[in-house]
Image (cartoon, rainbow, N blue to C red):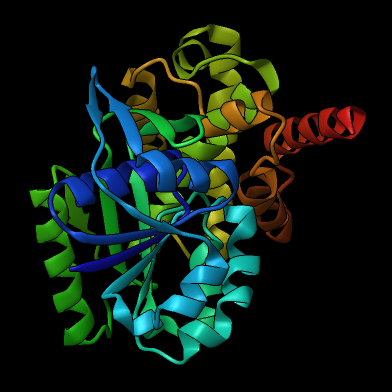
Length: 316
């Protein structure tokens, strides 16, 4: 298959390296020193004590639009930070709308697919999430990653009414992912799957950025565990605003996943340490807005969000 991955950070870069190592026709779009390093010395991914260093074609966004047609690719994978989804889709709107290629989101949050769909329609929108993976750029061109790194993907907002063409593409993508040592599964209800993952993201990412603590500490120290569970429960409440029915079982399952996972720094903590923009709006903001729309005050999430906003304001 012909792949374009927009965003070669900890998540996009890891999957790019896996696919390239498996011999897939792969192009990544990146920027700045990270792009220059990849163009000069290739993409290096350190994972589970080993190293991936396959040849990767890397371009900036301007060169991408000038040198390629969107339909040169079988699928476009969007792996930028959630806060950049709207600007990337706007910038690439004419380039993408002149084509038929679908866009797969592999990002945090529950609002990326709706943005993509507003530009391209549901038929060309594929929802997705990365599970049990921690990854970040440690230096330009070099990524550190760990975990199972499973991909879950599906037609947006669910498989109901999806065309055979799109379902066939997902099955082909799954075969390619599996062959590239990327465990993959197809979700019949990707919107539900995305909300389910948000239970984890909202539970630990913001609190880790605020405290500087890893996921194992947050989920095992009693006082922090209480806050984590409170923030997770507010996701269960918020999902109803999107007509997604999460339950206490979903909460228990997701807490079990993150509490048993490696003691990792979340992506939000890494961004905070590097003084980069945080995905607070995409994670906490989505929960707070929906809870309040339902008449529920999300005390845990709103408080952590306010503290993070206050810290960023003071730093600025």
